[in-house]
Length: 393
Ligand code: ZL4
Ligand code: CA
Ligand code: ZN
Image (cartoon, rainbow, N blue to C red; front, top):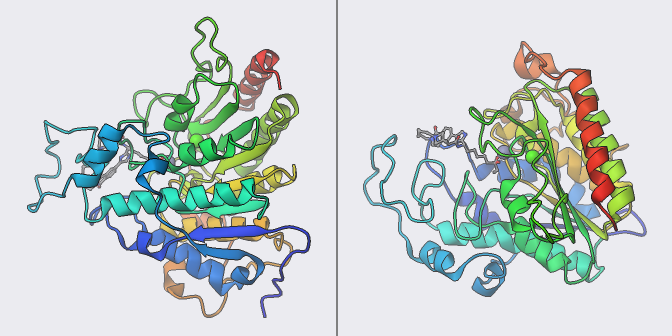
């Protein structure tokens, strides 16, 4: 027996739709919706579904998507069809509309269904928080932080996070958005650039010329135009390759601790992109499952309504480990979860090692060189502390 029981006094809701996972971006595209299947298989094998309210999420409606996206964009997204003949892969289509159809954001069968299901899960989760039916909502199929009002970007077509936060804002005066994906959460940041009701915080690899999307410098803190209430409400934490659990946890806890104290959010939305883990196909950090999960644990300690989104994550076995561990933290069975993977987990070979917590050596062979000095991390904390002087709850 797993020993996992339903925690007394608070509820976790889990939102997914198995139909979302059958979609394909293309054979060699890094985004594999199937990683959600692998994650769920681990979560269910541990018996965690018995400690949560499980929902098959609906597809978000056109009207719900239009709370953020332009109708021009949605209409186009709903009608474009993938090209019948695969075009030359490197050959970017010269008349891309809304940045659709290139190699990052390809057109594929069922694209609109895939997008509306991702947003549906996020929105269902946000509604459960608003109605107090749950204290923590989990939507691993969401977290697509690059999508813009009228543009697809970086594997993201519909910004489920923005749609979910807009729902939270109907009930909570202030929402804190935190993004631990290795990429900058530019779409969410931009959507809330002109309001002081949402504070966005992204931790990411920053290298303007060599790493997507190239935005998110330390001093990009929202347009400082006159009378913009949103000025100073974007926090950016640019990092270099190879950051470790220990450094990341220190910086995360220091920064988020100060922000919560000053901004006093009514709810927290946490994007848990798993491409910040060591060994990710696109990522550059040395984070382990423990360090990634520690961010969820830290946010949970505030006992505020909390929604967890997925996001990036391109080495499916690591994605599944992280999101299973983080689900266990949400239902507070982290002290009971066995570090050994369940005997009968489907696709057990996929995991290579039978532990939930592989060492850096097991993941990488040779860990990535850490290019983050303690001095630089202290300077980042200093900047954020000074920025917070302009923020009032
Ligand atoms: C691929 O192998 O940096 C797409 C994308 C498709 C299949 C074969 C096509 C080969 C890596 C990436 C050509 C690929 C050329 N296939 C991709 C500037 C770029 C233009 C596109 O985690 N080329 C663009 C987006 C990033 C760029 C990252 C992260 C999302 C998230 C939330 C989005 N785009 C250079 C790259 C491949 C591919 C291999 C790829 N694309 C890696 N990084 C990008 O934050 C979900
Ligand atoms: Ca990020
Ligand atoms: Zn990412």
